[in-house]
Image (cartoon, rainbow, N blue to C red; front, side, top):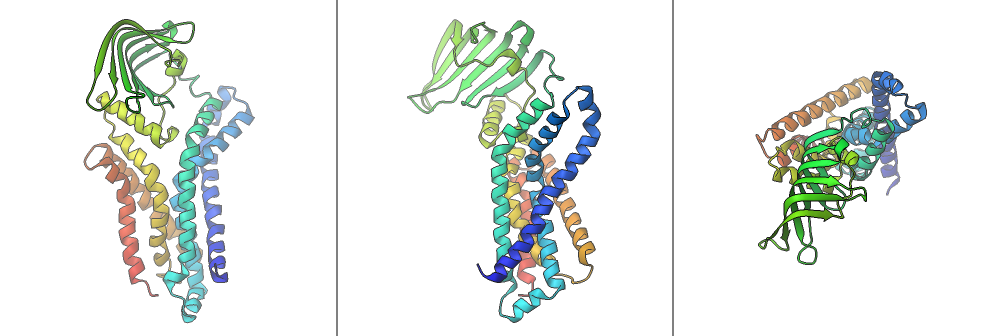
Length: 357
């Protein structure tokens, strides 16, 4: 990497890191101001409150990554333009496209951060909820018509859970298999009771064994002990997970289970695809912001802030609009998640083609 490349990338990274960590801090301050009274009423220790917000930083950072790339690119390129550094580079035979190549590496770095955050966000969010005692203050002991996904490819569809009586009405247990050696099974029962030895007993049901895509062996039973069904009633009574609290695969299994139950899963499909679209948008937003930042040399920091905020607002409006459109099934949910990125990508390609090199 040339000295010029290192200089350009260093300037971009400085602003990117300030923005990527600065926005979450502001959001934490605002959220804490609104909810501090609630946490004090719950008598949560100050240390737990502080640690819970630290756990919540990755989720906030994931959401603001495209904005951080946008701010870093606009301020960096506009500064280079204002002080004629880009003009000097062109006079030395370095085109604009070559000049911003290090910024592309920075955007790819931001994209990789986004994919990494997708992995660590779900467990950290769970720790945050535990510290803030969210479940404790929402627990009613009764829960109806829900789906519970485990980490070992098992899904429970429950008609009614009565945690105080250790009882379930209308339950279906699905275990995804891997062919004939470990076939997929579906166990459907009218009732289930939790025994003291930490197993559920399924009562009056049928067991489907599916070793491949065509065969289906069906058995009826009066009672069946499922030794892998070990989740306690209080665990099943936990609040339904939000999409941000589930990883890519877990959310996919959850969507599949809800589909089989006849539920509308379009909103969840949009959220799942956004886990991919938002990190990729970091690269797309760079292609849009870099030529845009060269359009004027006047205005300085105020102009850069204005352009960045306006673009961020437009992008967020598009994302929320597509959440609604995809959630209603007007267009494919997977496509809806990518529409904002596609729009900015097309506009960015036009601006990049028209910029003076």
